[in-house]
Image (cartoon, rainbow, N blue to C red; front, side):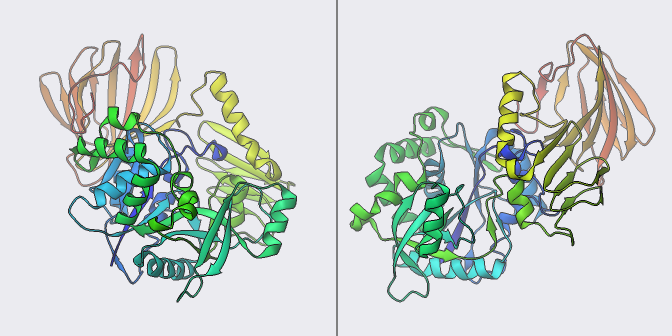
Length: 479
């Protein structure tokens, strides 16, 4: 039987600020190596024995091009990236995926995975998936519980029952338990009957569709209506906004899994224990816990120099970060912000994000470096009436044909070849060549070459906001 991976790529990861921002959240970041958490999730089934279909990714409008590019980079381009017009939690997201997965008459086993988790023991993960697949093939609704290694108060728990017939480890799922206090968490772990709730699910698509229709008919109806009116846009599936906006918000746990005990006719709720080095990377201390460390217990990334430093996480994106005589700290550097925190207070980073938002600053929403479907730009300097950007255009990519009412632009080619529309002229510029785009001129930048094109853009004018763009043609369907 084939497995249909479903990757849920929502959430903003505020506790991983300043690396994680609303427009570029933690699942898109390379936190443990060269690949992002999304890419790691998509590759987690590599080498698994079952037939694996191309993943369905459920995300939002803002992240669509970044996700498409990241999936392409790992050799798993997806033509089923489903765009939610608004966030409605995991049950509607899974329902959209199930409806799309069965459009051609098949009934695959859905494997639903959040895009922002880490698993360090892939063989153990595959063993748990094999056990889950055996249960899903019998009609069970399977979730995966993490074998706890501490009394954690930040996770929900799963209470387990008897081992299922003909199972090696799968158990009946007795109850979902909310996040406990420290004393109760210790009791749960000591009992051996409780697992952490990983938010990973596996079941036949038809079993899920039947269960949701019975237990949450409003969600089922709204999702069906939104898929009936869906539009395809290159790699993306755009469900109907009005229909999906009317959908109630609910989780897979609440909408279906917790209610199965009273509805045995819908299927058995089963939990498969998993001890695979799992983390939801919910905060910086969780990332420190799963990273490789030096002999002093330090985890680092980027250009870092440590002196008499112990049990700390030092994360650098753009410059040398040096530490002397510290311990149990988190130090995170990005081009536009630096955050230093006691490791025991990592959960409180979200309070800083709330203050940033309340003060009207943009640092919670976006990075200085902004990704676009054609590449990216970095605002490297700005002041009254000017802004300087470093722009990189992917091979074969083209920006929109556009004009600006309030600014002129100077473009200098640093490397690569630029094809430029400037008014009624078409120019082909190479390294160290430049052109001037007067205010009000239609213009377009393209990279006809096989290597990235890099330019420096100097903007000057009375208003330099990104909303001063009038697009006449756009390859990516933007207005």
